[in-house]
View 1 (cartoon, rainbow, N blue to C red):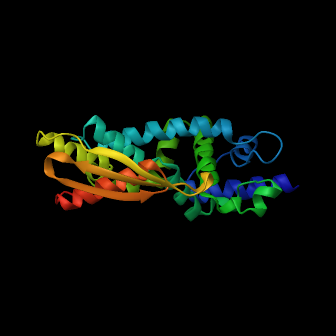
View 2: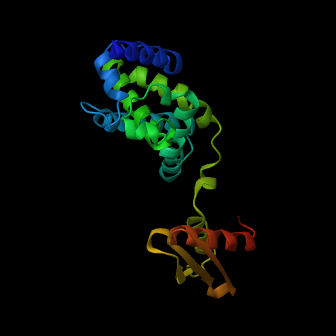
View 3: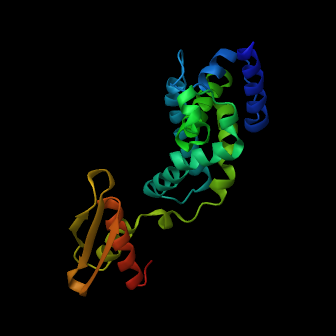
Length: 231
């Protein structure tokens, strides 16, 4: 009986939020079941949904940004299909209300965890594709991400600071920046890195700290870009 109730609630949720009706209740239950429960879970459908999402978003961007380069399209797509974005969309829609979790995940707040919600949303996209086809999946993805696609900033703005600093220097025939780890702080489970970035030909340098070497380097590059008036 509980399974029947969940199936009806889940189907109604999909109808209301995704705009499609899924008749295959077994597959729908699979798409909404976390691996913390026994039996089929959403991981296989998530794998399929991830591929469907990547293709459809690529197609939508290709259509709506006819002048964008391959690199620009890749950056735009990456900004849309990240787990953070999908988790935010799923959380706003209340997907956690219909995801089935084991007791441990429930107690730890898994129904609010964006990584779980993003995975379940991708699994639902896989279920939509299998039952209703690519056209329906495209309709759902456009419904979920269409406004975000329209509001995307210029692709150049999505480049990370290290890339932008490198391109700034290359365009002027200058040597690439030199990054150096100056200090590693904290316990192994909570490391912090202090990194410096130097532009020898311009006599400029900056330093920054971050929870990873990459983050510290990005922050140091961002500081130099501001000094160069190119942030």
